Length: 240
Image 1 (tube, helix red, strand yellow):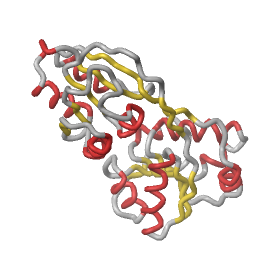
Image 2 (cartoon, rainbow, N blue to C red; image 1 turned 180 degrees about the vertical axis):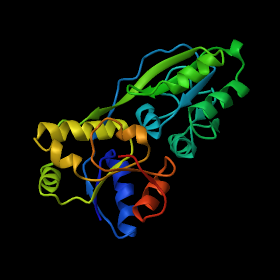
Image 3 (cartoon, rainbow, N blue to C red; image 1 turned 30 degrees about the vertical axis):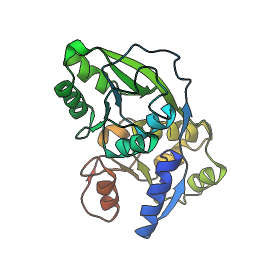
Image 4 (tube, rainbow, N blue to C red; image 1 turned 90 degrees about the vertical axis):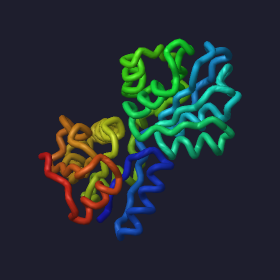
């Protein structure tokens, strides 16, 4: 199968390698572009630092980049973020069980409310789940936006040609934002109808909802192994 991958460049390259190992051809069109943001010169001294992305580690650069955070524990949403933090020189790293709710619970179990705020180094575009969960548990959260994922505004020429020429067997949808950006770029190029005729393989039904794709298949679980298994005819459901 010839499959369109719209993840950011680093993630897209890893997915392309996995698709190749399965005998598929990946067509890459990263729809989001990583851009670091200026770091603040001062921050209130936090009780802990929270990160939900390895890109936040990249944007910070190291344990001394955010004032007042060098000696506080760093809570990471998963092992990928934790590995990036170790490589950047962070020492006291605690890893959540996965997801914002589990991370908030891990922070609440380790940090008492009277020790001060939790500093969350985050993306400009985020769901708000972690700060909401921490607030629900009684913690004050200071948010520092350290990077953004800017949406592309045009399709690469070869991707536009593949869509217009009916040369794609599917689009892999990992997030609603990347899929929305793809649709917007296709519409701008006059290729919206052609794109919507391509089967969409999505991590969840919410990603594809309301975007108008004629054929949508949803992975049995919201992760890449389940998405790739669906391509091989193992699991998944039809949502359109």
